Length: 336
Image (tube, rainbow, N blue to C red; front, side, top):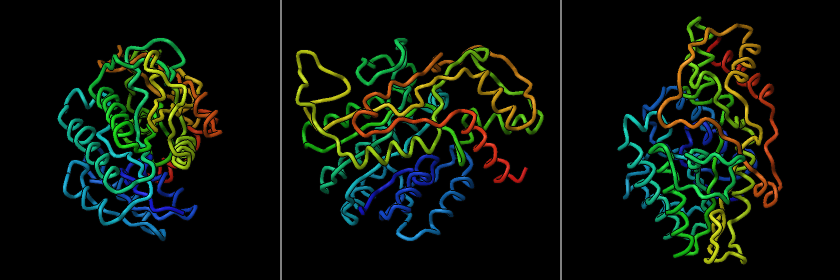
């Protein structure tokens, strides 16, 4: 039983994580700024479910609020922190780059400082598969170099990894970064493909299918993501005694610093996802085939060997089961 701060608690992953932590007996303080990047009512509906559970408290605050975050850490004295709050979205980073600097860079420094000065035992934070950028060697491994991001969102997440390593090195703060691969499932984000496709198909509108449907993604079901987060949270980051500056391994360190991919280890073509969704909805999609958008990558595929070895877990939910559960939730939530 621990006192845990979950930032982004009104978000997709944060909501599911907080619920699991509460169910197992932890005390959870959920933080969110409830911004309007997408429908705030969905965030409020998630929060309403959490606020009905004991041992949960919600605090509305922006990560970029330096004094507010410092005060929160001083007053609460968290055992562990999971930082999921961030400005999300690859495409939106082309339109509003400053939002990513404020939340993902300034905000993350505030979290690191809070952990450093208040004896937090372990910080787990969300990175992203987008850090692999221009890499084409598959599957993506944490031991690969990731110095060629292709969006500002990806660059901000790579920066988080570098910032986290610095604090692990200087202050021996145990930190673990998790590179999530295309998360989907009930209570998901409305800007993600599965949500957008379901809404359009049920409304009889065409769907935009980029890269002519040839895009491949390592779609990862939300329950698998949360299981991976909880296991890594309980498995405090540790140093690699064999790490050498002569041949530096990007995925480990002489500091208490770790990185893990959390992906399904089974990339699915976008057209195959759409076919699975059509079957679950019982309705055929009208497809508007388009070229790839700036900032996107043609494929993602996670190597999860390190995650499996260190915490004994590997995502396993099939795309058929996951999509069916999402569609059931979608119909229930929107009463369709």
